[in-house]
Length: 383
Image (cartoon, rainbow, N blue to C red; front, top):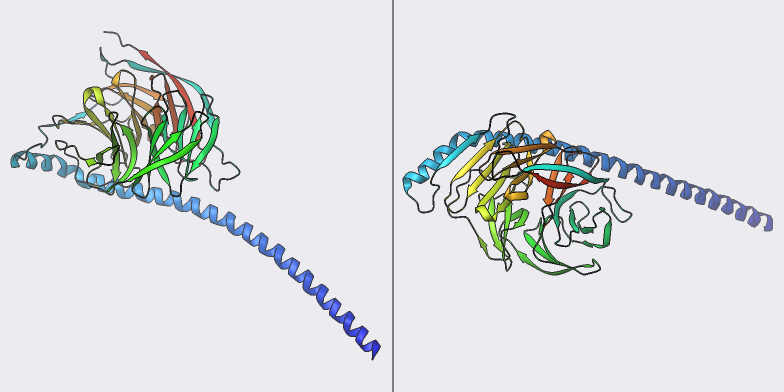
């Protein structure tokens, strides 16, 4: 009987050893499967993003062509109806290909690369960074929005991170500096968050406002009013006050179309009372005098997939031409002043410092995301 019990115990031990070994092998196998699945998921996500981008581009391009023939007719109809605030006139300016207009009052741009950095994810980030928003604080520090990792980041003049990034609960889109130490950030959930930056660059949320529109890009029109580009909305540009009051440009007539996110971005040249809007897939820049409603529609072979737009030196306008890997400078009349090829592919977003002497540019649509910092000088054109 004792021999039988010993034999049974030995058998049980062997079975237990086999079970333990099998369990360990299964755990190793499952870990490898999880690793392989994550790698495959990341690859599929990247391929899906690329495919979605191409499909969106094709759809928006087709939509742009479909409405081109109706735009002028729609504007004329509004004029004939005599509705108050309608566009007084629409001037379609097609700049000669490759030409740059000289202006005695608009300085031409001279840019020099100061430094650039490859954007890498940090240890606590799941995805490669994608900077969709940029703006300078008055002290020269750069505020950046990392859309994919839902962060607001402060950088110094060497593009090194300062303090601790602020982590959002949803995806942020763009940022605008609204005072010495406060910024406004547009969110994908129809809200605008207001953040405060401490002297040691600690970022905290102070409040938020809700918007009736999806707002992508944002900039300041004046001390109390922001300008936002809107998507999935028949009003592609709207005014939003700091306290959340929304209003529209009553004399501005837009093309009868709606944009997807990233299809249009806006800025405002306050001294010229001019709203500037890019149309990515129509390869077009619109200049609207918001006081008179007069519109200028600018197309040129040097302008391909215009994305970010901001005000530059001498109240000129800087546009990132993604398709030509360059920065295009125009005046508010739509005259092409200069074209500057940049050192990164697919320039996406840009902003100028408060004193207008520095320009920050980031890119999109490529695997390697970069951030570049340029110095700017004004080359006054010869009379």
